[in-house]
Length: 280
Image (cartoon, rainbow, N blue to C red; front, top):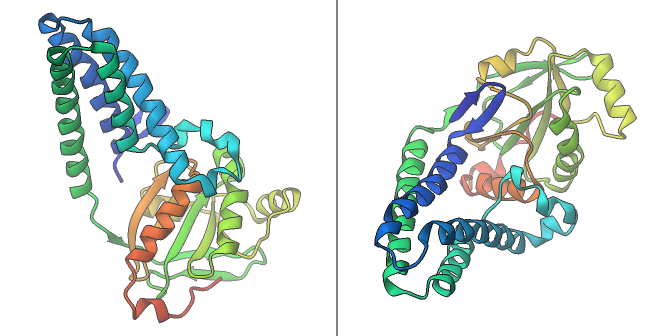
């Protein structure tokens, strides 16, 4: 997992690369301003803001079926979700209107090109370090006390959400994840509680009207250590071949989850699709 720890904060490498590229765009625009007949730094800053808004609106439009269920979540930008093409188009349109100079626009384009190339290179480097790994066998326990083994190969795609009752983001995303689990008969879900007693977990589920069917408890937190989990919630996407295809650190949005599930199904082979279901 490409996770960078800054004090108590956990930042994914992908987000850090994107933030670095945006910062580089502003710095490059400032350095190139001396050759521009128009103020470039201020225009770049406004273009960045407009581009981010455009990218977010584009993402929301493309995933409206998910966002219409929770319209307020369109403002939850910390969950991620930006459409690059829309962002570039919005920023470019603003710069064309604001600068009204081919020379200034060319310099702004150069600054943007440097930033974009840097982001693409960093993203490629991060992707090359993320090779799918096999999910280890994880021993856990159901709420009724019976042991359950989460196998490394189930023959079906599997989503494992590592969570805790004291974790605010875990509590916020849990109802949405439960809904997704109920709606997707083609993908198995396991909600693996970390380090808490059965009574604590059972009480939380009862108080919030959540089903216990897909909940398992890892009272020692061994799964989190073996999977090198940096924080909660963490959601792992495991293909039908038993390989961990992606890991999402932090609260996941409905739209991002839908994308992850579609991608997960894309890794299935025809033989995988007829496999037996994972233990529930």
